[in-house]
Length: 113
Image (cartoon, rainbow, N blue to C red; front, side):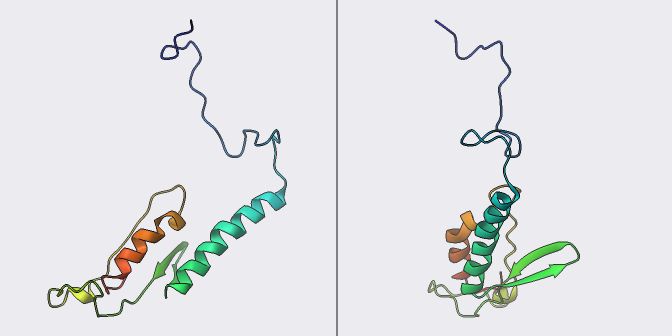
């Protein structure tokens, strides 16, 4: 039999822009636009529904939530901590939409995010 752990061929990785999907090797521009509208548009709607504002500093865009000063988790905050913002930075990849449950938990702290 063929040894799967030791292959003579190098591993092959999928490349979004070059590998065929459903036997299509190149995608029409409308495909890219639709994907962008669904992902980026959906994220903007979800973040706005949670009270975030999209802000920009130079080429960097980010979302800001001012917090609500009253923690909904029932714990007393240390004095002054409620004004210290929580900064969440995600890596390059799937985007913020997959972190919505984490963002919801961070919002419960009542601090700016």
